[in-house]
Length: 146
Image 1 (cartoon, rainbow, N blue to C red):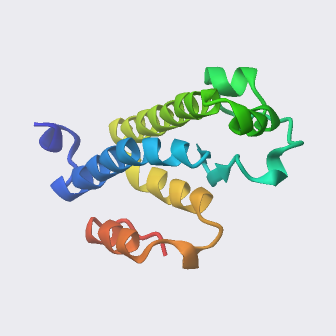
Image 2: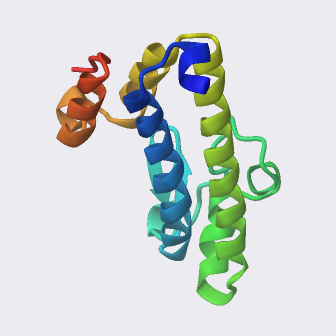
């Protein structure tokens, strides 16, 4: 089995599955509200602050949305066109696929705990912002993030 082959505890795999399920369910919800997922949280592209922001959603993202459109363009689209939702969905799916590929690679390379720690550090401004349920779940599989 995968657990035996890579030496991971079943709880670690449950954490991975949670991220996969959470990301799939949340993607649609995020795009409806103009939220683009980024490694440091999310951007609410409907907000006025993005009206003159001409950089891509995530400068490191290689999805079609980030390669072709700026935050300002997507912000403007929200006023008159539902295409903005499609562009954000494309980006959010790309973000999630990249995240899951990185998680998978870290498991294969047996560095998943380090991956999780780096993810949490980048996603949240401080350790105090880490969700307590996540800290506890990770601690239960011997990954200490706080």
